[in-house]
Length: 312
Image (cartoon, rainbow, N blue to C red; front, side):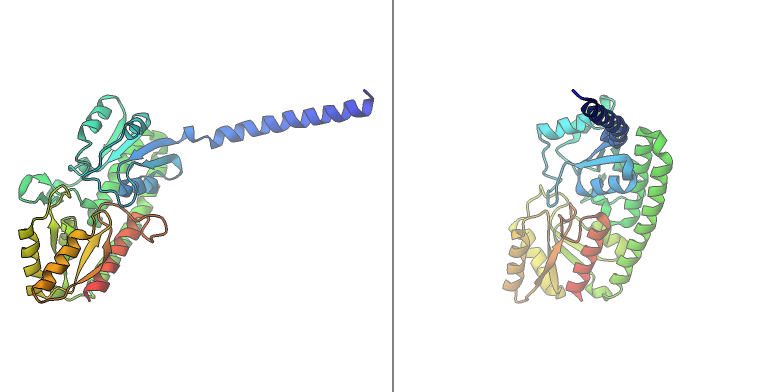
């Protein structure tokens, strides 16, 4: 082998080793293992984790858009995902009604488990139908309660990752400002309706926090949980209410089959009044990709826009 070829091979080998040496640290810095692995049950909570966790976490949601958390049953894969997580985030207040035992087991295994219920001001919680000892879980429809949820997530992530405290608190401060702006947006849109127009009829009773916060009378065909079935008498009574009050529109929900509201619409028509289906509201999940409602803030804005535009 002549000297020129030896020299060329040596240069190539040196360059290869140099590039390998340079690339190794960069690969390590980019490794996702440096980030907290957070698993959240609902789409709302996965979005909240991302808002507070920022670049310090990877977030996985168990339930996709349109999934009903009241009826959701965790698969073996879901359980495995939660067991491997650094942090598990769930709503509580019986929203994930079929998963309670799983969360109890995770707590005993030493995982950081954040339950939103534990950080809420109990005096602001509404009763589950007529049982004052159990609370309505749909707290995200009152932006002031979602601000409390954001603080609870901040505390939980800080507990799991103390070095990230400053980042989490900065993200919280910025997000609270966005939530204040969102609350103002909702209140401004509500003023476009007269008090008599502020009646919200939906597929299931998910909007009581919304009604209390923003001045709406709320009626749901099914109960707080979609486990409850609406009977013929329920449909008839609500149809009487709509016809008597001359309510302009009623609403389907993204996580509830539309047939119940369609049946209600037909029952109202049979009583001599035509009520429109005013659109689809996001109740127990955020919207999917390209829906314009992929985040919590976009979702609550989309809801109020749909409600006000249909009832005006």
